Structure formats: structure tokens, C-alpha cells
Length: 408
View 1 (cartoon, rainbow, N blue to C red):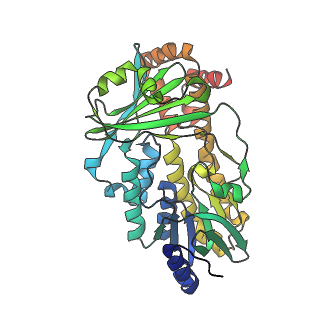
View 2 (cartoon, helix red, strand yellow):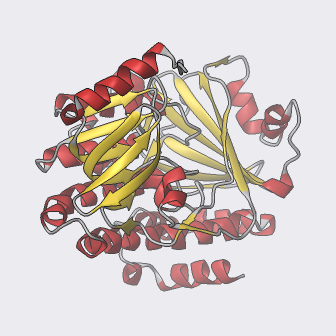
View 3 (cartoon, one colour):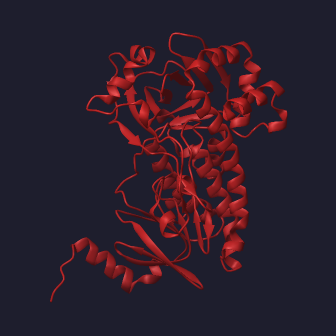
């Protein structure tokens, strides 16, 4: 009996079988988004060979607020990617502005080096270029759907055949398949949150990310180029009825944004994501680590997802040469677990406080007015949120307010 397979699958599978050494590597990365590419770049910068496997045929476009906070900007600089992003296709971001429709606003500036607004596709393309320049192999249109751990290697199963590596990094996103395969999936609780974003061709009216609050929904306006802005909506599932015109109904809740965009050309299709909350029991196991959203996620409300992914990738790349020399067991990866968990705890605290605030419309006006009246308080909160200010340096009344809101 003859078993017919698509020509592309035959060719790639035969190459994998007959030329396995071409696909052997130190670090195999599942996922070619920013998190996975950062792991590959960091691995190459630390003397390890790397292969990235990505299921999309081109840089994947995902629902993303597209604001890179200062830790992400610094990480991109360390990875050698920052200068590869065309200045004509990005926007500098000076700070964050909170707004309530028809009421007061408050703003605070980001700490150095500031933020950056850039389309997810532009960021991924620049990172892909850097990874290839450093010698990482990138194979698109394929997926990793499982793996087995041997004493001296990992054998990853792909839809084109087996790939052998000394280590497997799973950067396969919010709905990570490999997190489940590794037995690291945990149950998330709480309201289900969703998001959607769309771009418009219009000159940004501010160098700040604007966060607009209303009952049940937040809107985020981010400059992502000289003549482009992105608008992202986040909401609790029970608060928004989704039908054929639901994104238009979201815009109707924010007349100040709709007015700014009147007549502007739509520059992308709406893309959604959710439910957002994802929990991992651990980020590591033998010869294996979760990176980026696959390692756990709470919500996009703080815009810190890319910062966590890039900083964690740098950490993993730094410790991997020693970990692999010692056998790559879970114990050799504990430094990655500790450092990434430390970063995640700060993100989790700030995110839960922000969610508590967003879900209480009665607080929006008074709190924003207070932050406008005491800008140093807003600045301290923002610096703490991005990791540039220790908790003990927060103004006493600011820390008390945050804790009270998170427990309310």
C-alpha cells in the first residue's frame, strides 16, 4: 500500500531523516514570536546554536498593545535589535496618561530610556533578522506538538519529523500546547478577560499612551509610527456582548477616541485574544523551560508582557551554557525559575491592583483626579510598575492606596 503525503512534507521529512545533523542544535525554540526569537538571539550571544520553529509563514501578527515599556527597550538594546527597527516605523513614547471620558486626566513620564510604540510585525521582523544574522536557523510553516526527554537530549516531534536538541524552550504563546505536554499547566481562576486591537493611519496626537476608562471596558491608544496609532480594548467577558458590530460598539463607549479617528483610514484588521489569564505550575523541567506568555500571564492592562518575555529570555540565555554543561536537569535551571518568578511577582502585583481599579467605575474619577493633583504619586507608581523603584521607596500613602484597592 502506498501512503501519499504532500510533496513539501516528503521533502522536509526526508531532509530531517537523512541530514539530521543539520537540524541538531543546542537550543530548540518552539515559537517564532518576540519571546522565542529573544531566546534564540540570547542563546547565540552566549555561544549556543539555536533553531526556531514557527508555524506561521511570516512574522505572526498577534493582538498586542504594542507599547514597549523601558525594560523591554533596554532588553532589545542588549539583544542588538533596537537599531534594526526603522525609525520611520516606530514612535517614541514619553509616558502614560489616564483619562476618564468627559472628566479629568492624569499623566506621568516613563523612566529612562522611555517607551517605544512599534507594530508587532515590525518588531518580530527585526528580531528575526538579528537572529539569522547571528546564525540561528529559523524554520517556518511547521509546529512542535510534543517532545520526549532522553538522558542527553530532547527529541521534539514536529509535523515534518523529529528534531533533536540539548534543550527545548517553549515560547508558543498564551495557549501553549507544550505547557500542557510538559505537565506544567495549572487552572486559572477569576473573570475571563479579552482584548481586541486595530490600527489607523493618522498622526499621533500625543507621545503618551492614553488609557481611557469607562464602565466595564478600557481603551488604550498607542502611537506606533509617525502616521499610525493602535487602539486596543480590554474587558471582562460578562461586560461586553459580542455580535457582528461589536468593535463598533466598543468605539461608541469612547467618543473622545472616535472623534480623534473620524475620517482616518483603517490600517489593519481587528485581532483579538483571550481568555488572557494563564497559569503554569513551574517554568522549568528537565531540559525544558517556558518563556513569555507560555510561562504564565494575568492580563495586558499594564503592557508588561513583552518586557517579561524579553528579560526572561536574556536570563535563560545567560544561564543555559552552565546549565547544559551540568546536564540540563531541572535543578540546573533554578536560577532561571527564581529570576523570572521575581519579575513576574512585581507584574502580578501591579496588574491585580490595576484590575481592581478598572473594575470599580466609581473610583475612576476620584483616583484620576487625585493622581492629577499629586503627579509625584503617579510617577512613583509608574516607576514601580516598570521596575525602576523599589516598593520601600513608594510614598507611604501610595502603597497604602494600592494595597487597599487590591484587597477591596
